[in-house]
Image (tube, rainbow, N blue to C red; front, top):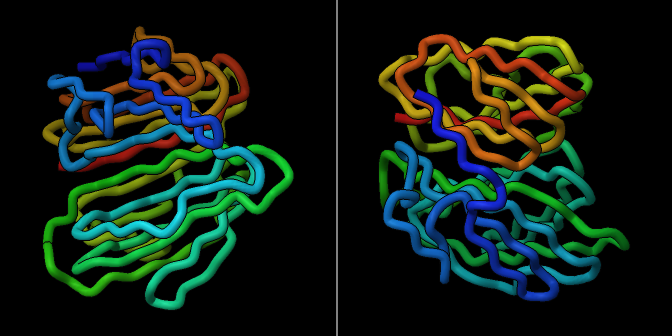
Length: 232
């Protein structure tokens, strides 16, 4: 099953400094049929204006993955972690028993990112944060695991849930396969470009909710960059 969720059908809120689109119910956008997809709870498509950002605020018991598409985001938290994550790279925050953080765009250009929240398998653990570079050229033509709590995914940022975040860059006309357990939930979004999965075409920033497929063949109709979450 592949359910297409066109970008125009998603929730939207423009706060001036933040232009946010919500694939799932979030804040003032509430849609009963879009509360989650497996353990995936939030997929926000955010554009953050230059020299603005999220002031300090708290989270707990959530795995929060940030995939930067353009620009960069600077992180600071109550554990003393600080870091700047640039385009194509990923940061992960395990909120655990509670963490306060800020996310700021110190750049002179708009920062565009996906912020993904996944419900952890275990609550009440110590919070943590980490970031890693994932050069786009190194995931050309194949999926690379960016963050994971699945055994064997050792070369990825760790998360505390039976889930995987993966990304690929695909040249126009090429097809990349992702192998999945048909009983799991895959949510796939093209960060840029147009793609086809089966007989379903998707434009940049559309969502594809996929289940009951063992092989997901993604064909790029334009040069494309895709991100997916695979969860229970």
